[in-house]
Image (cartoon, one colour):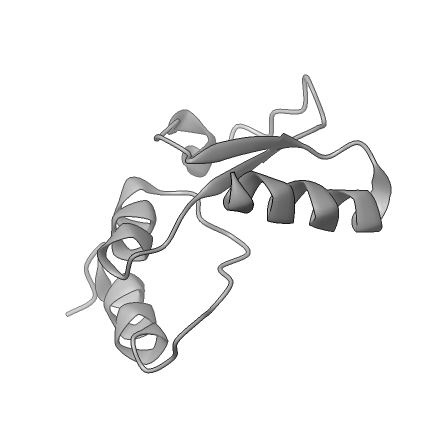
Length: 87
């Protein structure tokens, strides 16, 4: 049976095989909990103020270890994320 943790369980089993991974889309609390169980950090990207699609995932605002403003292009974003994780 497919429940709310079906995909998270598959992801967690696969991700646990690697030393380091990047999760580029973490929208729900159960996804964030899986990242944390594996010792990960969550970086929230902010940028497009006022953009709201009404998607169910936009209802959640869970704790992020760092918040980065995505307003400097891709290279700037990468630098900002690396700096935030090093702090």
